[in-house]
Length: 232
Image 1: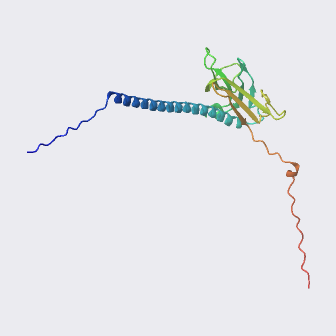
Image 2 (image 1 turned 90 degrees about the vertical axis):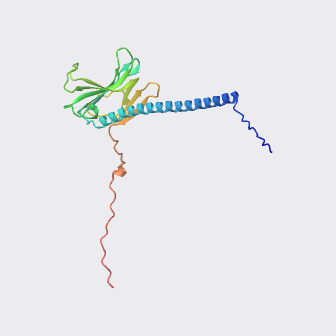
Image 3 (image 1 turned 60 degrees about the horizontal axis):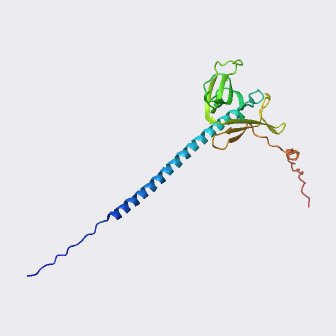
């Protein structure tokens, strides 16, 4: 008769210290992942807000560029005056136009006087916004009938407008000549917590300047009459 020896297999379990260390490591990894994801979400949100703000400023510049380049010359279609508010530039530019980008509508009959300027958002604060003040061209001075305000950009610090005068070859702060348009208009928009936005708008193309030598027509090659063939 044989006796079979039964071996007892002993299995060792995790200790409390090992479980505590594993939980701590998992917690640290989860915290690192959470911070990484939260940081990326914050960066994407800030980037989206910055892109949206830049797109709004670019849209305003494109709108003003399209309108100023469409103005006719010699009819007093453009004028500009410098102003200040709390030592900050608050210039104003006015133009005369019909329905189109400068009027921000395509369905208004007749001509309007449109002024781009700064205006307070409310009477209680100093926050300013850029917009278009529109009124019919036949409206008498001081009357407000038919006048409307179209806000375009809010929270703007300042608006500086300069006009390049080719006669004196300098930038001037006022434009009152009804017989001509300035070739260049410079806009400087003060923005909160960032650098001012500067844009130079060309109202017309600069003509090509040719020297007197270039203006002369090209010399045509002289044609010699054919000579008769020689007789032998």
